[in-house]
Image (cartoon, rainbow, N blue to C red):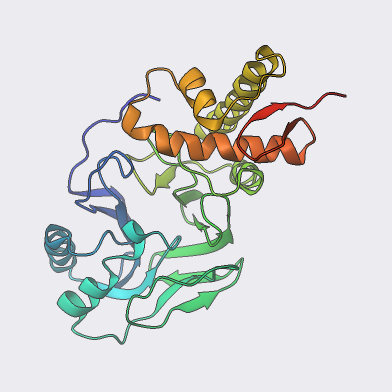
Amino acid sequence: MAAPNVMLNIERLSSRVLRILGCNPSPMTLQGTNSYLVGTGQRRLLIDTTNPGKDEYIKLLKSTLEENTTSIQEIVITHFHIDHVGAIPDVCQNLLHSKEIKVSKMKKPVGDEVNIGLDYTFIEHNHTFHTEGATLRALYNPGHSNDHMILYLEEEQSLFSGDTIINGSSTTVQNLIEYMKSLQDILDLKPVRIYPGHGPVIEDGVKTTTDYIAHRISREKQVLEYLQGSKGDPRTVMDIVKKIYVGVPVVLHGKAAENVDQHLLKLQAEGKVVTEDGKGWIIKEN
């Protein structure tokens, strides 16, 4: 996927959506985590934050609130990863001067929640957030993480996709079977535009989602073709990465390996590949 244009630190994306860049660029976060202020009134929803200790992000968020004469009604978190939840304590301490703020997310079905020093409010699938000028419907959308949710902005027929879909790269996947279903769920919504967890706004939500699905199907085909060509000689995950992720920087091979591993687990569940030792993989003979 082509690299996106450089984004502004603060940008109005629509009459009800402002983006504040997380000031945490990296190979995994691209230009940074997108934090969104949603609504039109004197209190608005904040979707996601950034990593802890990002003073520049706090300054940007503070100036955005002041310039728009607004405050934070509630913090809504798409998923538990540290680049999304990490700055919540900093926001509370420096901007709210209090821990009396609702922080809402979906509960992890397995594993501990990231400790942010205050309690989460756990919501269910189809929960609706209301603020002046905006209505957000929360939809469970696992795959990238086991607690991941997306937020459908009803007034715009648009979507905050978290890290299920990002702009400028493919995303990492914790469970590919769930992830492919989540992509189809997004496609069924037919979002006009997508506000991703990383990268610029996606102006054609349906096309991009379709492309994401096609990309994963293509990767799966590459994995199968490579294993078929090995003629029964077991291949490791890293063998596959080096073969099919040509041109991808070595620094990203670890994350690529995680994706390949997910493809193999999906193919194993479908009875298409097997492994004897959990390391070397071959095509399953009929």
